[in-house]
Picture 1 (cartoon, one colour):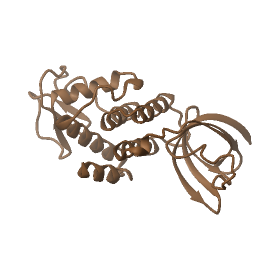
Picture 2 (cartoon, one colour):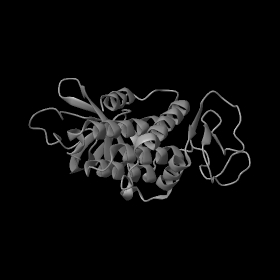
Picture 3 (cartoon, helix red, strand yellow):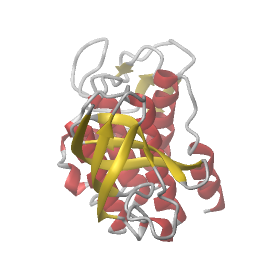
Length: 252
């Protein structure tokens, strides 16, 4: 039994019993885990507004015999209030929270992923291009988790890419240049050299710069389709937030 502190981003929250809240949080030091905030939905609770979904807080937890740790204190650092003002920003924030929830096992720390998610939420809150921020962070998550190919060279000839289109074999985790492209798995997609260059840049740039160089049109469509294909292949589970984002895109 112990009391500990961590910086956490709340990935999701749901009502539990009469006044409690069940949380899934992503901690800077402790990774993803479940917790219970007892009495958090009481109007006069000191936890009210401190641990909302998609917020960043410094939290004190009590770790006892239960699988769920208990929130004893919480101090909101950033609530990202502008994200819910725009449906596309909200959709991508929900997607990124789902990606972290699906890719990371319980209690597996990843400070790099924590900083990527925090920077992405900050960029979305600042009003930067939602899709660009979401894709940059999403592809970075796949790379950190080891679910991405070598984006810099052809998987067959091992030469750097100098022309497109590039064939992405999602099932094999391989990329092929125009000279080496061949029939492979049915889970294939072609992207332009420009789309690949954007992806390569995202994997190298500092997370605080997410969204500064916007992708639009065909490049955005190619990279968004590729990202969700890779994610579905690696997790074998569709994101709950994907339909929400897809509906927003159709409306736009």
